[in-house]
Image (cartoon, rainbow, N blue to C red; front, side, top):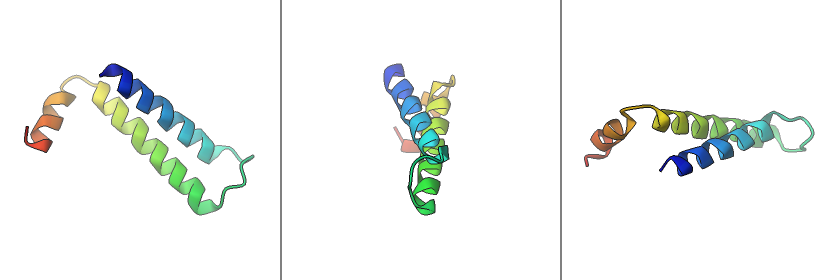
Length: 63
């Protein structure tokens, strides 16, 4: 499972930097979407790497 969390972290970092870099000609709305999406991916992957996150997710999903 750690592989998928690491992959999600890498994707989040790529999205975040794609929103920050000024070289791309994306509109402002797309840049904000990339920043928010990247931050959410990074936050979720770091949360899932923390100890006890599996129990929290099981409680939230009712498993």
